[in-house]
Image 1 (cartoon, helix red, strand yellow):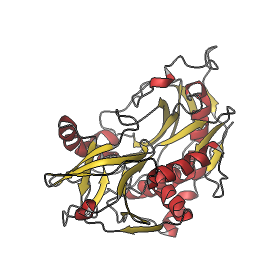
Image 2 (tube, helix red, strand yellow; image 1 turned 120 degrees about the vertical axis):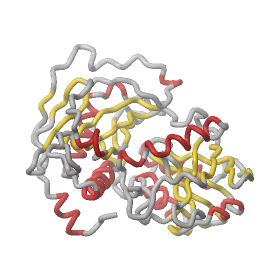
Image 3 (cartoon, helix red, strand yellow; image 1 turned 180 degrees about the horizontal axis):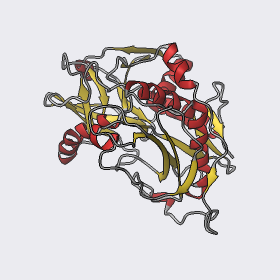
Length: 367
């Protein structure tokens, strides 16, 4: 994954956006959305506004605009449609008990998109532009932000090669778009422990590929393995490395951790694993709580001796794993109230809700 200071300095130099042009609002925009917040799952729900801006050959994204949520127009020869030139991110807006709205580490999503854009030969909004677009999208759709403790507004920034291109080459135009959707639990079983299946034949990423960035091309290839696993009663799939086929990497949509005693281990990111924002946060929290934190190669056989396994991600939060099936053997993990992952999650939520002091400036208040 490209991460040199020169690359990031160049990417961060894009000037910030000017004031937004906002589409006319309707009288219902400030009213609360009529939703059964107690049964909010993870599925698309159309909200009010989306943010859109474009750039051409100069690589500079212009003044953005909040438009009514709706379809976008693309040429059949758009780079994203023909060659998969696209990235997406995921972050959330939360409502605190006093009604204030905040974001969690959106600057990290911005920087991850910039690294991904360099890998995919795309210009990218600056950190300031990215965060401002996310803020504006959250504010414009604030009636869709669930009440305190009922979920969050999932915000999805997209960067796509929208310009037409026929031969294999970078697109001549790019669109940065941000939309949002209220969400609850990612998995249908809610807070119930996950039941994972280790896939030995299908691989999510390979060395030298784009597995370490949030490219849209990383996700469709895992759908077949996910579909097969879910048809057999599993929650999701845990993938192995493509070279040795013995080291665990990540689950389809989230990172994975193992706990053994006072040691927290997670697969090392070497270009095949997405470095999740929640992953980074949990590692910091675990360190603060006195755990030894390791990023290393983890053999699948270590799943048999782990005290605890859990997954992390913006969509899934922190999810305990109840069982993993590997080589025909089902490995069961004890689930209790004193799990390490529950301690980590409790501290994370405490910081997000303002109950625990935010000493690392993770929280960005927007209203």
